[in-house]
Image (cartoon, rainbow, N blue to C red; front, side):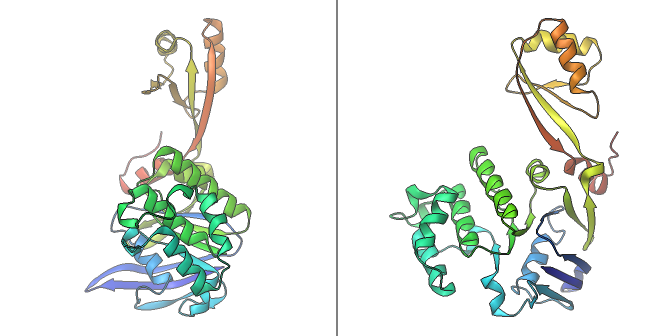
Amino acid sequence: MVQVKDLKKKYKKEWVLKGVSFELHDPEIVALVGPNGSGKTTLLNCMTNLLAYDEGSITLVEKHHKDPKVFYDVSYLQDNRILYGNLTAYDHLKFICRVQKIPASKIQEVVERVGMESYVKGRSVQSFSLGMKQHLLLAMAILNDPKLLLMDEPLNGLDPTSAINMRNILLELHKEGTTIIISSHNLDEVDRLTNKIYFMKDGQILEENLESYATKKYYLTVNDPQRAEIILKNLSFPLTINLEKQLVFEDSHISIQEVISQLNQHDILIEDIENTRVGAEKRYRELFEGVRSI
């Protein structure tokens, strides 16, 4: 699906990519994570032939990355600077259908999947909010049912509902056989999408599987959060209360069973329990901030 071999790229005298190599064979989701300037966008632009590189080789879906036929099976979601402000969303999607010989009927299917029915026609893109532009970029990227989807910061400007919808679409595409490479600063969303991360540091890739780092973060909604907090803190349970008045803690510090047991003993009613997997932030802090996880 993807083969990047010893890729090197420099701007003036500074090497931004210093021998990047990786291969992807089976459909999977891979996150590119690193500080600004670490080379994430440069890597994606080189892979899609938007930037020339100095050394190395790139193969996408078993074709040379400069072969125009690559883009029948590959899509690249960039930032909204590629959009034409005086055109409508429908104009953008219709153009892609014409170039790639995709039936125009596909537009409605994609528009409904992304959730942009109300503004696909009748409004120029220059009047769109940032989130609406991100929706259009996603629709444009999945219109050709890509085997390989490259995404540069697709979560920028999305409200929580739209971010959840984006995540669900990406997970569905993965189940349908699409390989996804996504760069993102949103480490919470990265944790929800994949355990496989390519951390970009000093122009190179540090390939990580976060299964050994992953823990669960729990959010408990209870009928008396203030009293629950006092009870649990008196037991030295490490937890916080968020703005939604939920008890928040990680299972690396204490087990959910212990918390439930103590709340039950003190007649605290648990109304809801949510959990998310965390790991990307811990590893990021170790690699880029020198903070060791406890």
